[in-house]
Length: 397
Ligand SMILES: Cc1cc2nc3c(=O)[nH]c(=O)nc-3n(C[C@H](O)[C@H](O)[C@H](O)COP(=O)(O)OP(=O)(O)OC[C@H]3O[C@@H](n4cnc5c(N)ncnc54)[C@H](O)[C@@H]3O)c2cc1C
Image (cartoon, rainbow, N blue to C red; front, top):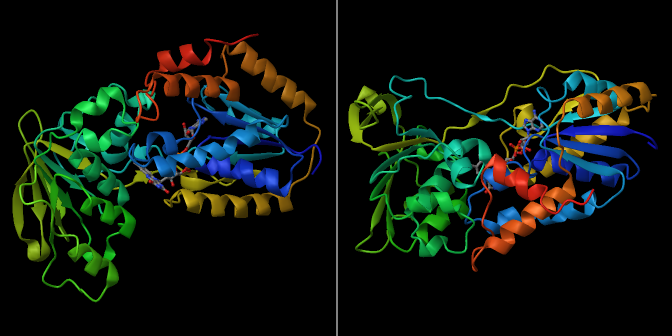
């Protein structure tokens, strides 16, 4: 595989595990990783909850890969608008598309666009400092309804139910710290029956450890307590007697309308047998998944991670990347691409883009760490302007 040139589009977990698998399976390949944001890591930085520092620590392993002379990060480069994908396909022998699934799924009910209604991933992106979401400024009230049966719904619920002290060693952004301790009631509406909920036991257990929140699990009469996941849910009920926040889980309910004049005030739910009820809400968060627009299959091109329509977790992205790389390397050939590479370089220069490399990310990383007051691990830069400024601050050309 000497001389094989590979482009990876997207520096989230799928893209970076693809890089890792390439370097393990064909160490001499030349790899350029394109990323539209000034920072790498995708949802590890902007999705994974700020109090899950252990999960975020996975990023440390990529320092070594980007220290190699045959690997480059080309960040602040939006493939599509900034450089055509077709040009990448001409300039590289293989192209991996790891662009994620950026669009939040919708309920498809009336009132869903009222102020006070937010997507779960968008909400997490805002409090995690994604520069595209800086202006979201969600209004978090005392009565919150979260719709969703997976871990993102639990992340949102946990972060809202934690106190300032419980978030002290997280990297919750400065602009988002106002959300802690506001919610008095959080109702988690799960559309499926409890047997089919996709919560993991470790995320559920974290709710049981909250200092000032109680948890009530309302299981339908038909719930099967012999299913371990349902028994684990049932065991979660409890909490401090004078809880500041009460969390209530309800199952097998479909949100059929969002009601309110000028902003969300109620959510109409439909239960088994068509029974309807209204639940009060001044904030509604829809953690019902993300959608990708999978690219049509093309020769020498492979979609990975959420861009391929998957919805797995970070460890899953690693296993999947290794398989995709094995499959793509098996059919790969090195072709003369000097002319296309020259066109690509000319395009990038002409676009006027001031692209960022791994050293630029290290400058952002160092500035964020230096700005943090312990035990906070970092004080995130959360605007395009500040990220770009710091990335170029100590640049020596
Ligand atoms: C709120 C939330 C919390 C989560 N928490 C956990 C958790 O605790 N543990 C866990 O294991 N999993 C968690 N997950 C799931 C995990 O984040 C995903 O499995 C994983 O991020 C998918 O990786 P990806 O690389 O496919 O997508 P992404 O992480 O979305 O990465 C895609 C990257 O591509 C870039 N990109 C997009 N378009 C372009 C373009 N045109 N040009 C260049 N670059 C582009 C993006 O900027 C981004 O950096 C969470 C997901 C969400 C939404």
